[in-house]
Image (cartoon, rainbow, N blue to C red; front, top):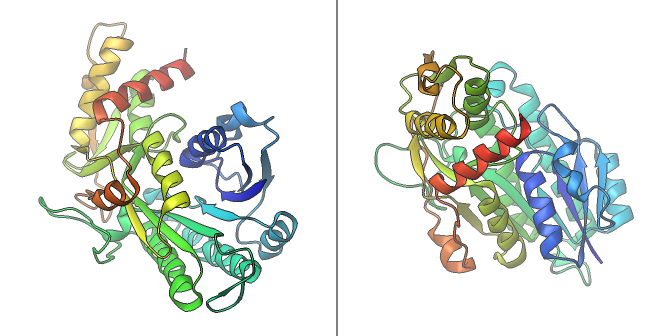
Length: 337
């Protein structure tokens, strides 16, 4: 049975990906290495906690001795690297953790994998030619767009926050291990994810949580910042394809083609909540919307051109925003019955 190291698998995207991947691929065993920081939740993996093809290890990707011992024990076929500090606001107030985890942690994983998979630059150990390191990254590394245009795989990196700068740095490390050592790496850059199991700090869970609690719903600035929204299970399927079929050394952008302003997001969510769980006073949740001071360095617009993964790997987003947000809100309502 092939063993894969998944890092940060108790986080939002990882905890959606792991059950999906195990269900699709009975020939794999996943070892989930997660430090269980505030954004991780093992309850999100309860459906597989007794699966013999799933193992959980609590630990830090920066601890080289631990990572080395796991490679030595399990002889991993691949690494799918989700683990990251990812909340932009936290990177503004406390950037050091982002440098440590996102840069140093990625380096540790890459370098241990190189040691176990390669004899020397461009000389892979016998039988390990298909071993692969998949880096999960973000569209925020590209910076901010104007009113027109899309991020492609050739867009120059221009990160504007400590978070996106740390992810850009880790992407460059991954790239360097391909060009310097010939290591089999692939990188995916995704747009904003949403869906079940997302941490409360993110925009969509915050809107839902604040609305249901009868509290002000905070929207940064004028609410006109634009993001491309990707349903998390569509992302999971793109990751699977990139890991299984992506070309070594390549980057694949994964986006939902669902651009929305924050004002549109909060309006849709409030409208759905008005229907699914009306306020007791009969008023709309929209009355709770409150505009707050804008985030420092807030990028105005992100939007991804996903043509490459669509054409090369035959990936397609199955959810549009209207269908995905209905599923997302229903999941959150089930949690607060």
